[in-house]
Image (cartoon, rainbow, N blue to C red; front, top):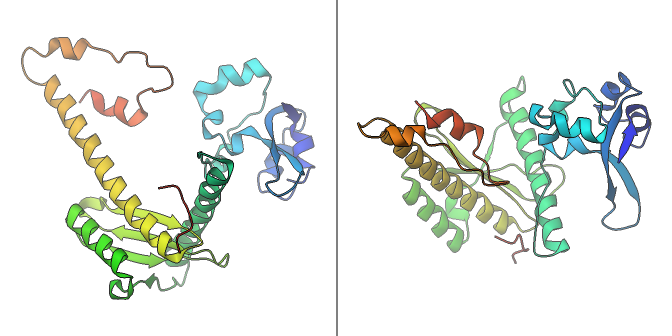
Length: 256
């Protein structure tokens, strides 16, 4: 649905930071979606770009024009984020994933502000591995063995009181690894952080190997056919910007 920027700026979202920017183009039409309260029947009309980051991209301009979205997103794009988006086998599962991610991202932001940006940085709350339950200590040791480097666990829980953890491992030339986890179960938040860090490391290695294979295929004599090859159209699964640039040169259930 479409709403005028003025309508959104004067709605229940009036106190949001981007409302001031919407007021600068009051008569323009902006694409919106209706959000429904999880524990109730209240609804709220929310601009689509806030949760659909691709909506502000240049490639989406034709679609925005087609449906009548006339907003200039140049100054609004900074507020676009997919944090708190999730899918699941049920409404409950998806909601738990989404809420935990929103809490996790919020905790991450506050941690960075307090420990790096602040004039007087706050000390980080490192967890002593020896104090972890045996299964988590074993998992931490397995992850360290797999990545081949030391790692730390940092408690980044905020005033919300939902246990939030950061698993961090520094690396050469800024190639650090990190994983985050949030859950009503402190134990599960640690588990999520450790497994996410491992997931990042394994994914990065697979991508690196594939890119090395692509570069190797372009170099040797007789690879002209490969150089002329182009990616086939595969619907929604399109190559990412990172791949284009480099081509040429656990259900969040509450644990006890």
